[in-house]
Image (cartoon, rainbow, N blue to C red; front, side):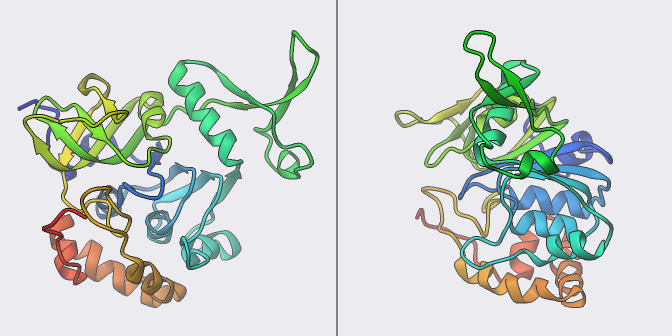
Length: 288
């Protein structure tokens, strides 16, 4: 088995450092919640967090003081509403002030693609009629050298570390993603280091047609973390825990309730399996 396959706590200790730019990506499913919890346990701070759609896990990381800045294109608890710790940080500076840099979905995807391609910036037809360029100095305009058209340009994203969750890895450390694939592949290729948590480690990936395969040589660590995407879903393994997402709205609304929950279930547990038991979340034994 490759030396890149290691416990999640070791991967975070090796590769995630204070002050870095860190992207935890996943779109609708395969969101790396377990990895985010380990970053919180290890008390990382002053991180610039990057994510197209920051949701509950970034709410938790922001509320526990891990972040100094957020680069994103949409933020919320999907299907429920606001993420309250995110709002409290922006509106009241609790637990510390949070700088924000907002982009469109298409722009964030293009920025990751530019980073993965070794290019300095991304170009798109976008932001026409939008006020975002007035508030984000990283959205600028350039003239096409061929047509004279004015286009939007934004800097490439090259995280210090990208973290994703996936269904499988083989014993060499190659990773399989299937189902909805967002920007995970590009976010990994754009990063200086990459950690992947997976549902299982197998002898043969048995990749279905059009699946996304990430080769072991672009990864820094692969970690076996069953249900590591909960409460998001992992296609073919378990469904989305909508009840948890609804409950989070109440848990996170007040600072004291939030801190008590995080201290008990995240800081008070040694790993993701213990977190699931502490929070009363049943381990899935059947494929969804």
